Length: 209
Image (cartoon, rainbow, N blue to C red; front, top):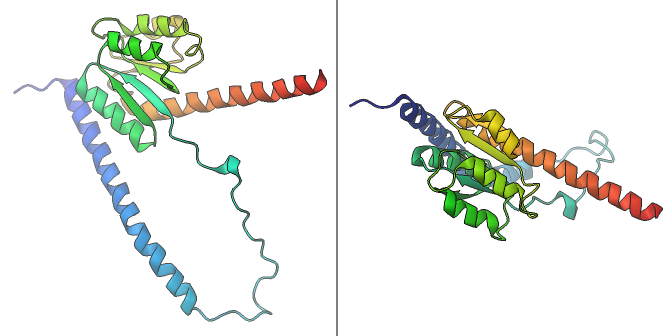
């Protein structure tokens, strides 16, 4: 049986990703055991003499509310080809993102027009109902989605068209599928930086008024 090259690549990539994920889970499962053993070792260690023990060790400060971990960011992934859809979902979820999946353009447009919060949108172009370029154009016309980062992931060379429509990045399938998490993280970091800069300038302007 002949297996298309793209499907074969995706299967290999997903198997590799699954192996990494299981290895990570194994490390996390062993961590509690390590944590329970270390305190007992410390307890049995003889106390240092006050002359030789380091003096005035700073006590680590408690984490402030600003340092608390942010809630997971939500990414809308629009892709009608299930192997790619599931691979992208796995990659993003391993990085801690919450992923909402959609397999056709009409359903995706309904989600985009809704009040559901999305931090980033990732879309294919060749979709049933409405293609990805049209979705991006519709998205940029909505006030609550105007600044949401958008990535187009397509097997066809739509890079320039995607950017003209309003996409922030273009990734080629299948070779750049593995880069979705890195690209999403970079775009979201840039977006947070823009928001913080705007807030700082707003406060300065307010104080000077």
